[in-house]
Length: 264
Image (cartoon, rainbow, N blue to C red; front, side, top):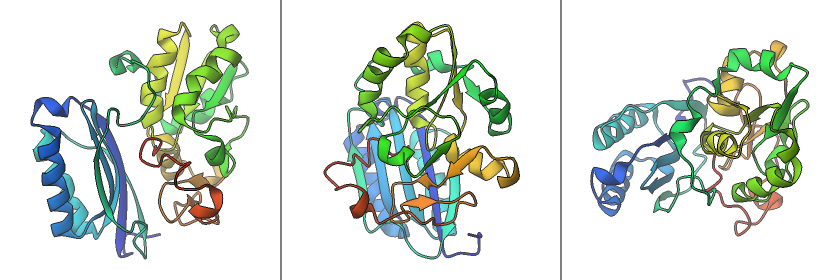
């Protein structure tokens, strides 16, 4: 989908102690009012540890909203972008939660420094013979597409992943572990978690699958299938266009999918 399409969809997250700037409830109301005024829809999660969001709107409105958030949180946001002819969200949802992505484990995010691998270097890493390639997403996401040779933990939610690692990977702490998720946020937490558990070499795909699909051409790609996304498009193909994924309600009920917590 080209930038001439009517709706721009962006995903972003940032680990920053935003609660130190102002009360989260105040930020929540400011953001909601700004989204309403600019005709932006989607979900934005606030927690003491940062912000996590996928939103959609007209490109000019999105640009202005990003500037607004950067001023509000005194930061610079890095986001991934795609385009659609229709809105992929039906409402505005600004939430306050304990975590911006729910692992239910204490993690020092700073310990993940140096674990990021760019999309253009990813193929070389996962082609090495001694690498364990870990898909940190849930089972229903894995089944729509993944990297060739990736390990499926078969989880229902992100907070199940530590148990899988303990039961299945604890004897491989000397191996290289390369992990990936949709947009990067789950790996931002899980890479330092793995290091804290004694794994020696841990790597994460910078920007996640979405950035890989954006930067690596299909001729050189090791991605197979489509990428599950948490909006009405359901999946996107290698060109980040709406895929062939079944309707969200057909895949899993809303009660079973923690869309906000496992968003990326």
